[in-house]
Image (cartoon, rainbow, N blue to C red; front, side):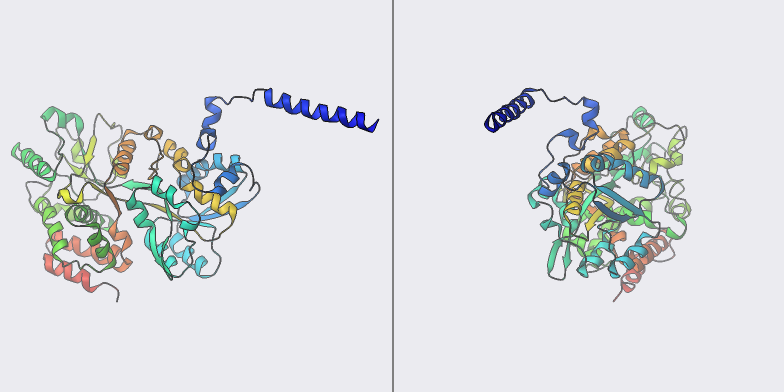
Amino acid sequence: MKKTVWSILTLLIVASMIFAACTPKPTLTAEEAAKLPFGGQTPPPAGQELTDALAGKYKGKVVSMAGPFTDADAVKFDDSVKAFEAATGIDIQYEGSKEFEAAITIRLDGGNAPDIVDFPQPGLLNTAVKKGQAVDLSTVIKPEWLKQNYSQSWLDMGTMEGPNGPITAGIWARANGKSIVFYPKAEFDKAGYKVPETWDDLMALTEQIAADGDTPWCIGIESGAATGWAMTDWIEDVMLRTTSLENYDKWVKGELKFNSPEVKKALSYITAIWFNDAYVYGGRKSIPTTFFGDAPAPMFNAPPQCWLHRQGNFITSFFPEGKMAGTDYDFFYLPPIDPAYGKPVLGAGDIYAMFNDRPEVRATIQYFSTGDSVKGWIEAGGAISPHKDSNLDWYQDPVTRKVAEIILNADSFRFDASDLMPGAVGSGTFWKYMTDYVSGSVDEDTALSQIDASWPK
């Protein structure tokens, strides 16, 4: 009797397994798949923990994060990770603060580190790395995946010196680009002007506009207590085009002086434009007193009172209401100068570092090394992905899409130098003395020597 019962049970089990194997699994609709991480497909080979997380192994676990995202940015971040949280059961708890820089140092030094920290300035992370506080991500995320999904420049900027040597200190999650020049497209095309491909072309265009009786450039660097930062961005962009990345990095560290031939050479390209009153709307004297957000406005007058404005992609929020990208305005990449240095891009971004090593934290940081982690934010607007596996079709705004394409195709990328330098220099004497130099209250040698003298010993 027992044998008969077991035989029947065995047959039923086998039959159910055959039925399950033969029963077609429900097919996800395109809309349903789009709501899943990686569209419901196999995740990239970032690490085993990411695969395990998507299999539900860390359901109910909490990963804490801290960073500068507040208000609308905090909402966009939360929305961008909802698909990952839903698929894995991991709860990412992000704590944003407008006093992030001061607060995070206290937490790290006090042994109360969040699992993952979002640094908008890599210099702050570098301080933590020197203290041995950050986890080496080369032991967490597969190095071959990082090489596959990031350009070498991003990897270089994420490598920092710890107590025992260099480590992969963080991975880049968002980026923004500054190496672009806006122009009034309809009027530009009507005038027959051509987008320049080289710096010589740019100067030829500048001269052509001036010869036509118009003013080529819209420039302003006034920004309250931060007056001068727009000038430093120009210098950084030209430094990348006239000297090596090694020299740029030395400059950031204070190993290459401001009063060096390399910095003076970069300045010569800028002053050839800025100090020529025929090239700047309002002339040189207007530059220090013109609010940076107002500087491009004359570009939209009829006819334009200036034609070219170099600034980061965020400047479109200062454009007159109703102006449309691709119609009323467009932009081009700030051309290269020396072919030896290729086509570099200057920008900024957010770098994520890990401070507590648990499987669910590993899975989360591995996810952040993929473009999928910022897909929702890109679609909502306000983010550019540095990941090679991101898709330009995600960008709804044509300006942001074009900037993203420039960043992804750049030969090299470097972070805003003034944001990396010690505060006394980067947001102090660098801003101040460049403003003084432009206003004419000090000469070049005095300005550069004063900045060098302010470098912390």
